[in-house]
Amino acid sequence: MNAEELIRELGRSLGIALELSPQGTCRVDLDGDMVDFEKSGEKLYVMADLGSSLNREDAHASLLTANCLGAQTGGATLGIDPGRAMFTLHLLVNEVPYSVFEADLARFIRAMRWWKEWLALPPLPEGRKVPSTASAEMSFDPFAAHTLRV
Image (tube, rainbow, N blue to C red; front, side, top):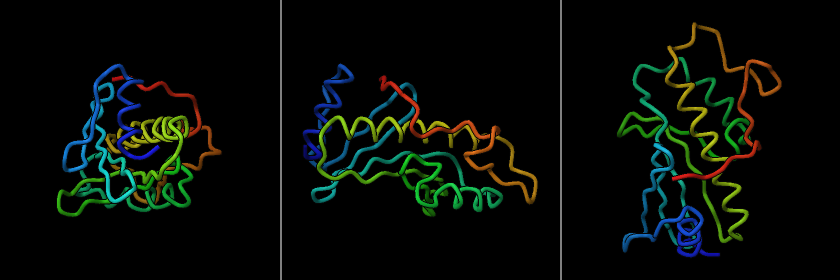
């Protein structure tokens, strides 16, 4: 399915009318979390803000480690929007069946919520990093089941 079809089907799945704007964008409130969709060429970007990056240099190494090969992001990519001083998460979607898109989106939302919570915690003491996914301390499982809700 192409970007327009994926967004329309997402709307049907959520029980709402959903379309990309003439500019190719759409914002959806998923249970209190804003997720932006933007069509660029034949690709669809899924994007979300995670929290302020101001004075959060303590988080950089942990976020880069988590970002490596999408290990702790469900395959999405963590970044910093320097113009807005905001940590972000984004996912690039090609034409795929809706079932693949929904599974990818569910992992994206799970990762977004996990990192938003993590970034809301007080800064880490110097030298402390996010534990690996093998650690009992780390509860993020990008492949756990997740239900999409508006």
